[in-house]
Image 1 (cartoon, rainbow, N blue to C red):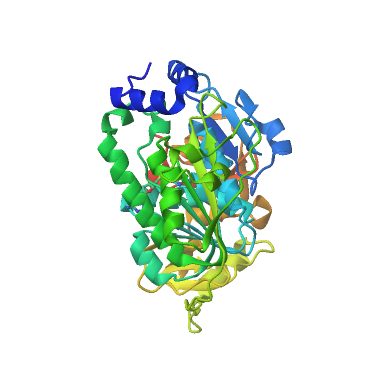
Image 2 (tube, rainbow, N blue to C red):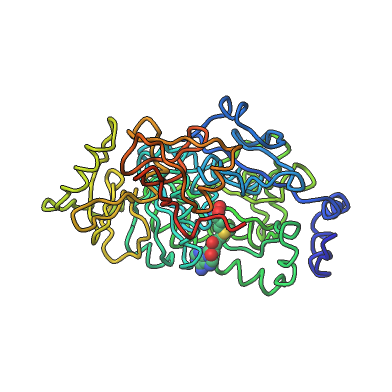
Length: 457
Ligand SMILES: C[S@@+](CC[C@H](N)C(=O)[O-])C[C@H]1O[C@@H](n2cnc3c(N)ncnc32)[C@H](O)[C@@H]1O
């Protein structure tokens, strides 16, 4: 059982009163684990036939499944490498749906790494419109970019910026913003017992200052009628109801929108605010003793009105670009697929999202889809392109069976036996889902699976 900090126990007992026993009992039980399907690549019907794991549906998330981490390791299955699902704490899956992102909208995920909620948002946008997925720490931003790539996303720009710098670039720009804020992580104690060592009352106080500051920058990037969803994976009222209370106090043009609460999802607690603010009952609390999940807080806010309009210009695609080698590659290998808004950054070719904003001055890790690199007299496809394709889009496809050894050999970076029919680039798929690239010559397929992703065991 997790050893909880004494001060935390006292505080939660005081807050939860009669409910406290049930709440503390959850720490004697194993944590919950889940994954969420990538419906850009598969769907629940198809998954019924594919599912190699023992799972139960998560009632409050369409396409979400509980799995038993004592029995299965979905993170090591080839379907994970093919981007068929994202492993995510179940109650965290509730939040991104509140954004209700639609194709064509401009959405910002301000604290996005490692990408659980960004991948969920982009899927609900059906890869159309613009998602800016931002992370302040470079290493975490890199992991975020890898997950975005694995999911086959085309409409997502990954940036590595502070909220402050981002807000200077994007005034009044976004329709919807998710602030999944850094927090004291009280809902992570079962998953990561080490987190209990970093917990203190002082840390909670520090977090709420940080959260308000981040929300302030989010406010500056939100346009009229825009929506902010604020969430944490912690229980402390200071970081949840009280942050919302302080934020509304600063911004009379913001209002709380009600969140639908089925499946034992609770109201926020007005009695835990400083002014007993009744409206916070419309925020949501997911408690580990009331549903199967580690716990979350979420609030949905709307900007009632502002006359201020954005001044962010659209990106201007260069007219003079030498794309000859890419066009030759397309002709040789693609079946009926074209990519819009082609733009070279250095020698890397991107397909930018539609209505892409000007990006000058921002640290950008990915701008839409990385198609590949222009080498001397040839085009070399990027891993990201393979994951964004469907097998029918490519002329030379080698399908591996997830249950056979060749599949693991490919993921380990080994050379495979060739088909004898193909020459040059082949799209390697697992049970029909793209995994990466290979290159066939002389009866062998040279492995182009990225070195950093290869399986080591
Ligand atoms: C709760 S996590 C985000 C999880 C992510 N939304 C997901 O679903 O995978 C909070 C993120 O905020 C980032 N962060 C930490 N300090 C920050 C700051 N001062 N401003 C913005 N983001 C910060 C952390 O690095 C972390 O990636």
